[in-house]
Image (tube, rainbow, N blue to C red; front, side, top):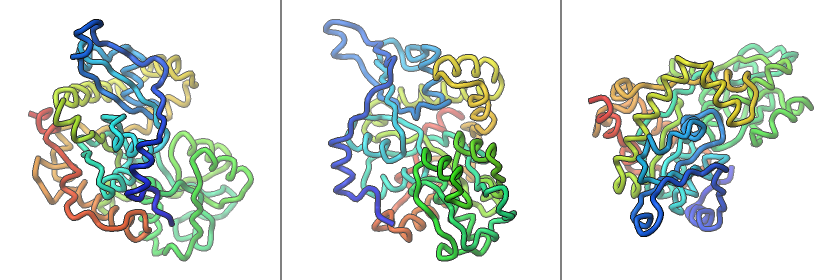
Length: 347
């Protein structure tokens, strides 16, 4: 398995990547000489049902960051794009899976996770062809499993196989982009897939059967999550903007869970998607309140070393090393996790 971002590739990608800002970028700073003094924040979004797009859809950027701050929303397609953009300074904050986040950190990216963006429970699952007769993970021996490498589902798939006593030599993992999986599934070129929403429901609607959910790994003390990654330079320069986003994120997360009808109406119009797609995202969205994140099971208090997040990152780093996605284990993973903002929110 080839390392996606070597140190050389890491900086080349940063230099050459063209990340277009999404339509509707909000320029909220003042005009004239004062504009030069205005602050800015470059916020990433995967173009999905997320807090960033909700802020855009509701024109909340001025409320969130202040009228003197220009908010640029940058659309990304993969965790590797987030890492490369942050390395090049063209992105300040974005949610990202822990696997690409770890690859970036191991390659020297100066950024840290400040918040558990969401707990991954059933938005990522292992699904098998309905006529395969497979009912357990152990039944995958000798089968072809399609999934995108260097992602949270790659890590979860290997962990799931291990729980069933299945080694990597016992199955055929096939590296496929998420947008390739549905067509490969329809052609019956793969026996199973470990993938996320919205691809997942397309497979189950085509006869697929879910046999394992990422949340099942919690029984083995593994937490699979998306984190909010922030460029260290931006975090040090504008900590108030980071905190402002996190506070609004918590409110938006509550809205997602408590007022789904309003969210569906807003996001279907903004993203031009159907209501069912929005509801699937809302039904598989599990935020973790700041007070809960301060517990040792999650990020823990500032400076705490023996936490669930750090243990999971340690396990993930070992997986990335063994699969040649990083060349060496980071010496100190605590530099990747900063719970000081969570502590301020919970105070």
